[in-house]
Amino acid sequence: MKKTPNLPVSSRKVLPLLGEQIKLARLRRQLSAAVVAERAGISRSTLWQIEKGNPSVALGCYFLVLFALGLEKDLLFVAQDDMLGRKLQDAKLVVRKRVPKTRRVEITHE
Image 1 (spheres, rainbow, N blue to C red):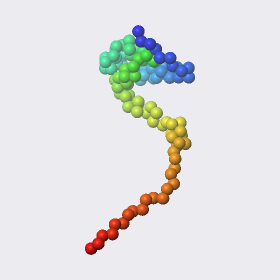
Image 2 (tube, helix red, strand yellow):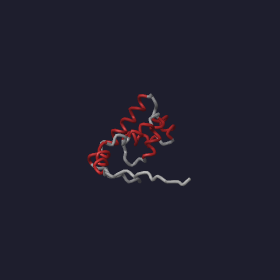
Image 3 (tube, helix red, strand yellow):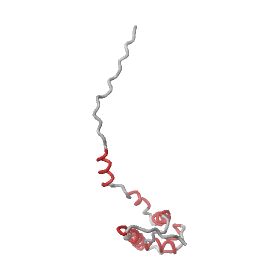
Image 4 (cartoon, one colour):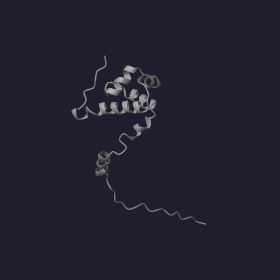
């Protein structure tokens, strides 16, 4: 039996919301659970768990379902606009003020 990860309280609604969005995408495409599960190479039971937002389902299975729905590129948007990370990075940037190196001019004897 798989152990279900203990998610922080503040994030317990994220996976069920993702699962619901995946289910709605499937229904908008008028695809049955059996068809999507077959295209994704997973069982209908696993698809059902994904659509419920079960955190014990491997991320790879979520990806396979997104791929079967033609939505795999949506994962590229995760953390794309990482505002907090960028602010933290900018706060730690050290601006070095230094005189640029001068070019050495070689004198050749002709």
